[in-house]
Amino acid sequence: MRTTLARIGGAIAVLLGFLVPTLTAATASAAPAVESTCVGVVVDPGHGKPSTDCIPYTAGLTGAKVLEKAGHKLAFASSGLLCQIDGYPAACKSDAKHYWSYYLRKPNAAASAWGYATQGPATQKVASRETDAFVYVNGADRRPTAVTYDSIAAAAAPSSAPSSAAPSNSAAPSSAAPSSTHAKTLSTSEAPDKGSSHTGLIIAIVVVVVLVVAAGLQLMLRRRRAS
Image (cartoon, rainbow, N blue to C red; front, side, top):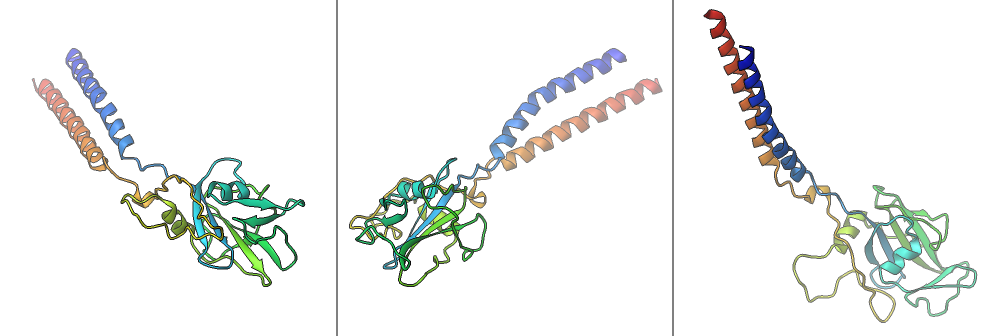
């Protein structure tokens, strides 16, 4: 009897040896895609529609680098202060009522939850999924528009359908609209869930096989005891 039980146990082990790797592979394929993260950026010179963009995050990225990667041209005064974005204003100088203000918004914060940056854009390190805003103050202080990170990221993601129209977020104070290349941001809700049904089927098969083998083993033991 022990020999028979050993053979049955070996058969179960072999069967599971084939099914477990398949189950593992199916589970891995069913996992949601890893979300690509970016840093939102808003540039509002005070005339026309503010431009938005979302730049793929990398460690050590600064506010100034985010602007440059979005295609904006920057100019700094001798003091190190950012004085022009895309050639605006015409003169690279600032005073108490005419300057580029720099705001930050933390990841997952409300659309209107802007706060002043504690450093200039040349040294301010940014975080993944945060939003930076540059607003030109022309006599009166202004806060950035309440545009959400998700809408900025969605607008920056390349469309699957070709379009001949210019992007709506390309308004810039310079003569040429800035351009940049973006990594598509894939939200968890959009992530494909392929393979989940296959995973459930394989789990069901494994459970059924184990139950059948266990039932057969129990029946065999009863018959041997009866004999």
